[in-house]
Amino acid sequence: MQKRYLLIVIIGLFAFSLWGVIHTLEVNAPQTTNSGAQPPVDVPGAPAPIQNNQIMVDNLVQGQIITSPLKITGKATGNWYFEGVFPVSITDLNGNVVATGQAQAQSSWTTADYVPFATDIPFDTNSMKSGNGPTYGYVILKNSNPSGDPQFDKSLSIKVQW
Image (tube, rainbow, N blue to C red; front, side, top):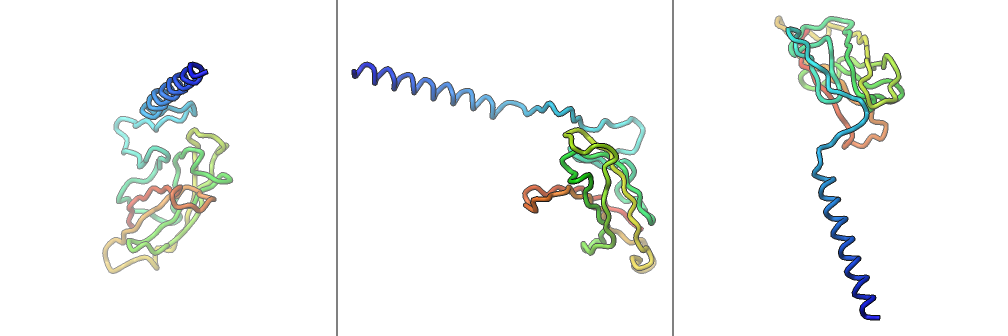
């Protein structure tokens, strides 16, 4: 009877050790997905797109002078969208919101792949001037986060001038 208990304990310890080794290998393995989403590829000679690993803006560069309506195009992974849209805002340097809009998916957003988006955001340039020089602010693209949980918030900020 004691031999059976000893055998069961040894088998249990072996199984637990094997699980620990496998778990450690999985945790330390490089993360890959089968979603098909690939980071955007840079085109030689073109201005570098503004991007992070989940969103890329095609037609804005840092410090660009913007005019109304601001047209923005690019692509974002499907998890940036909810119901095919995500919010975009224009703020001054102090974070005061000057204008808001929504980027609209140009194809099915229910994918982990990159989905093209577009938006036109009108804003009043007269109320935004400060003195004689240019006024600076930000274009902020945020992911849709229907949960409202701040840990899932993502954004891309582009400094612009008008």
